[in-house]
Length: 473
Ligand SMILES: Cc1cc2nc3c(=O)[nH]c(=O)nc-3n(C[C@H](O)[C@H](O)[C@H](O)COP(=O)(O)OP(=O)(O)OC[C@H]3O[C@@H](n4cnc5c(N)ncnc54)[C@H](O)[C@@H]3O)c2cc1C
Image 1 (cartoon, rainbow, N blue to C red):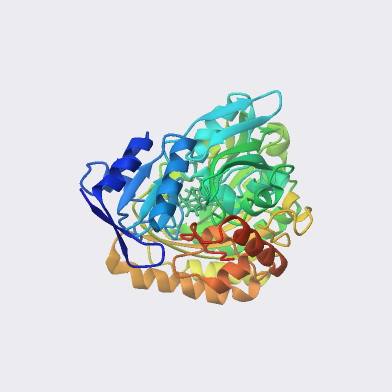
Image 2: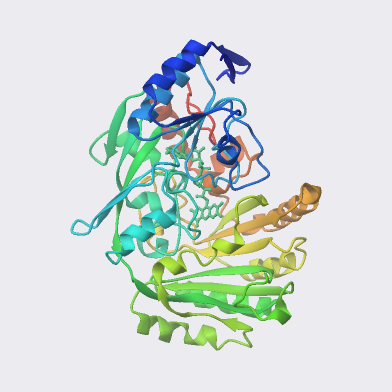
């Protein structure tokens, strides 16, 4: 059967059935069209705001399939996209009408405890990697929600509970295997194809398809001290003020995240606060549990908390504590800034705009990241932003399309109001669909952006990998 797919330069490409047959003969994984039962589920991603339908989905079973998919896209001039964990807010994993190269079946993880490294295939979620590394009491620097894909997170930067100690996720990648736009398989590291290695550590998905990552691992847990403490929304300013001082001097083993929202009906929160404004601090101490207990005592004694679930728990459990707040299939819209610190104005604005939240699921989050990432030299990896000490994420989240306008307006209002608190930098992995050239430029230094563009010209001169926050050459 002949099919029509979106072309890389616009318009459509008519593919005769023989072309598809040839591709099928070389491809070991699954090829899905809209006629296949698994197509609908596979095309859908975390953010329900994104409703694109690829013309063909290539579910790769290994590196050889990725090579064949890249060859097929090039040969026929097809628009393509790459799907890792499908968690990108802008929905970059799915292209309209083109070829979606889906890595999500590739979920192997191999740990070398003696060398303290792990190889992880590019379809892994954060949870897949934590599960295997924690068997050995080790962990990679990953993010806060276990269903997020490692691939998009790592090539765009990556931060989580271990970032204060070890830097961005991409600062801790030892090597990668990559399929380039001319369908070559390259190993990239500090000593092999070092320019491409550099670009893939924060330059996002513009340079090739990573098939596996080798991560540096660090001793963590398996039990750590962590959890959350919650107070009523009326105490938000007092708690944020205390958080500001506490987090600025806390040792690197302790990472704190402030969340302002209306309380979800979660079992750890008392029924009387459900639906009411709260402020919660999520905390993870990855050092000795006893040290964490002493450090956290003043925070836990602050004011009148309505809940406190800080306890000794498995690190892997800590890594999924926020999962329930981020289910696949809701509508999501984010705005974000990097902050050099939290000042009194930021405290005021966070409390004020939390009070204007229009959905039971939306939140304002302040992630503490200062520490190791600030110490690496400016051009160490293009994710850069080495002056940032907190990430502000204004996370709109709601159920129905009818509520789009009001929730997006809330996020934009808070974003504009807090602009003066920003370093001016932003995180490429948090950019929404409509954020283009100027916001991409804000994610990188000018020097790094020029260097990225030169590497793009070298490895992908025809801009095959364009369904990204594009750094065109
Ligand atoms: C609920 C949630 C929580 C999050 N928490 C964090 C967090 O704690 N820390 C953090 O840093 N970020 C976090 N993020 C942001 C996250 O880093 C990005 O959304 C990231 O793009 C997700 O990666 P993915 O593989 O799931 O993305 P996908 O949507 O599958 O892919 C996004 C883009 O990544 C690129 N890409 C994907 N796979 C490959 C590959 N194999 N090779 C090359 N490029 C590829 C492509 O350009 C693709 O278009 C979170 C996102 C969500 C939705």
